[in-house]
Image (cartoon, rainbow, N blue to C red; front, side, top):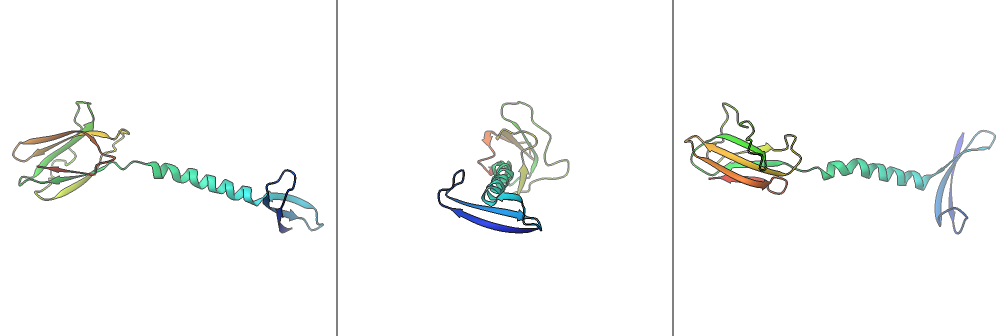
Length: 144
């Protein structure tokens, strides 16, 4: 089997102005397969675009929480906006955010909406809340 590529130009009925077609021939010279090469490349381009688009459209839910005080943050919680149900402490039992330090949290957690309510509690018992934050547009919160 061998292959030949033909570039057709001009007004050919049923074809575009310029069309690249590959023909495969058997040993007898019979044309056994024709492939519109331009169509294949167009199909591959569409397939590549479709596979890339969801990743490109994915939101970034990361938020850096910066401790702008002189007291460690011992508890950090967030929830879906207006849910009135704070989720579990994201720092756990032993971790803290020291004064001047920061920690990045991925706030996706199965919540597709970008709106979050956040709460930080310092070691001295004082708490700060920040409500209705679009975590897909904002990337840090300095807690004072």
